[in-house]
Length: 173
View 1: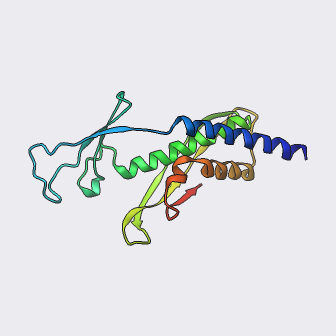
View 2: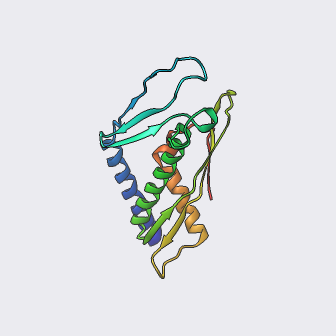
View 3: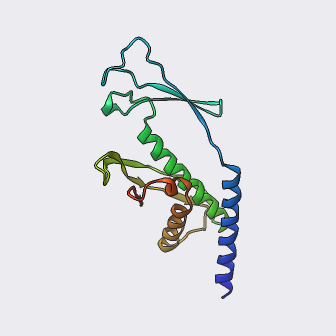
């Protein structure tokens, strides 16, 4: 019973922290700038490159995916979604790990986003595959079952995962 009360208490603390974070993060904004330039706005002939500013301090070059005429050096929306999913999952995992006193040293992820048609027949990111690799401090380890439980909880509390359509399959390897 003590362990259940202990875990329940930790879960309540995590929920409380998430509520505080949500209440403090009501509005997020970015600035996006695109100009036609010297081209013409004809399907398939205009440049999709644009600038994304975040908090006036970060500037990203963005555009369409290479398959749609974009520049491979620019961030495309599908990559941005994969980055958002991976980053949110990691931050949620780290918050939970800190609460559980898991001594995480590194967290790396190789994410793959898949395009396909959704139930309405529209192109969409229909699957995102996360492949997190976590390193702990020496002499600390968790079982596969404990890790799976923690990854499942991280997914359940991730703001981005909760913002996606139920049709988007999230795989955590």
